[in-house]
Length: 250
Image (cartoon, rainbow, N blue to C red; front, side):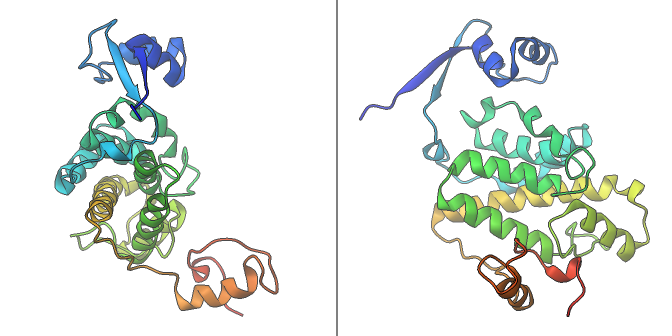
């Protein structure tokens, strides 16, 4: 069956991405959104999902460098990771305004929930695979890796978060290094690059058929979940991250 495409003008695309006023504002920011196409030219957007357009391996180092660069330019962790990945993926992914993920910085506008770097990278993964199983596989592994790995990589000032939460990640880093939360900038900049690069690596492995999960739920967490999770005796909780990072044993 011939692929159906929706043809939009540049203005139409920006309006659909956030309204006419937002479109005009974005066009004047100099951020390069849709700049390959002149004003009034058409942009052909294929029907979603777009997995078929991820047709060559990502340059993992390039993704890492871009994420670090965009964090340094003030994009934040979520937008920085997302922007690096969609730009590396190219069209049509790169037509999505990266500002859509800016809310995720510092765990959601400073709320300390899901780490913004995971949030942004996961959004890019979802953009590729949609509701497919690969979305769950990659993001689940990314969260497990993040929780169990001393981050940022390649530095003596790293720490293990034992959680995908920004709050826990920053707090454990402060305890491990003696730094203050207000000094987290260089740490989060490097971590954003690490997370975006890891997501790119996992997507490459999915594409090559070599992906093997290496971060399953721990035995300790499974023991808690068997009782407290859905269908368990208590049936009063939901989640797969380490219970011990927030709760005492019993």
